[in-house]
Image 1 (cartoon, rainbow, N blue to C red):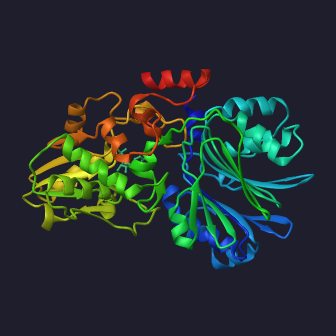
Image 2 (image 1 turned 180 degrees about the horizontal axis):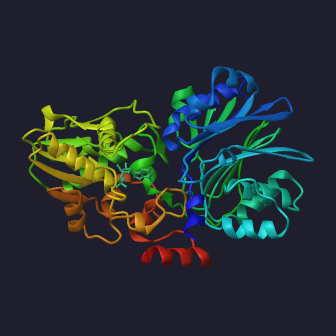
Image 3 (image 1 turned 90 degrees about the vertical axis):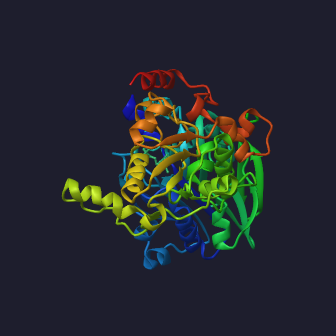
Length: 473
Ligand code: AMP
């Protein structure tokens, strides 16, 4: 059972471009902008005349695509994908977009998220004769679409979407149109932009700024966006919706320059820092953030607490991803290659250090160590998420309670384990009000399940089984 769910969770970035003569180049830039959402694989499919052609590979966008490769992807529309993989499933067969050829044409698709009924649907489809080439959820949708008895492609797609459960943002691409859709809870972000006459769909709005497009609007839960040469049409495939967007997008995952439902990510993180400072007051000399995702919250903490903000930790952006570490001693050194403490800032000081989350507690322990080795007198660890206690079933790589230090340790125990002088997590209300989405539904439209186990979707029998298993492991 663990194996099943581990393979399914995918934090990814997706983009679609309709009607631009340099579609592949724009998709390349967009994927580069979304690189933080996945570094394991990337792919682009373009519509070249009446054909869909593809290039995909393992690695960073810049490693997968050379100028020659992009030049070969000539066409006026494109979709693209960056992939984050969980261990053991990083193989080319799982790199998206997927391209399928059928008797009546071709279909490409990519997605971000995780279907909670993928295993059930897959089993059903296999029993009916479908053959799968990858372990990705995306292929399930392709089979559902092609098996549908509905007349038009849009009807087939709507029917297929209504059978999916979980968190998903999909882009489906044919010779004639580009169709995007979001799950009924809108777990993952997805936005629409316009660049002159071209339409852009992207996981995050930072893509629009990078390519000079205007933001039009966010896709809402249950919506299906149909873009073709006649323009754009927004319909629904279900009215049974309730927004519960992933709070980890605001805490950790999305880029600070993106907006989700009008909320800027950097501002939300700053507010989280301010809330931390309001919720518990301490005396300290400097505030520093863990680069990169703790920086915005640290700035907010400093602003509210009036303790000066300093750069106390430096991240080396150029550490090779596949650094060969010949010995344990050097492996430890590898950590310092990635992150170092600024002795001139922290020596002899009482330091507040802010990070976005503690998952297994490994990073925070190392950071406390680094700061102490650099001479910090006291280290006060502040976390801009509440304790992570439950796995995510909708696309964030937090999969088993076994991995989560907060599941079976009290805050005091975690403090001791990471070696900090004090440890504080933001409260759930503090988080909800810091993000402050303009909605009046539960948790103001956020999914808070990782913190309180309140999952927005019904969990099916086998997921329930897994959830119970996770709790006891
Ligand atoms: P850990 O060492 O397991 O406690 O990991 C904590 C660090 O992982 C934090 O600094 C976060 O920025 C980062 N993080 C949080 N959530 C995720 C995630 N879903 N995938 C990868 N890294 C994460």
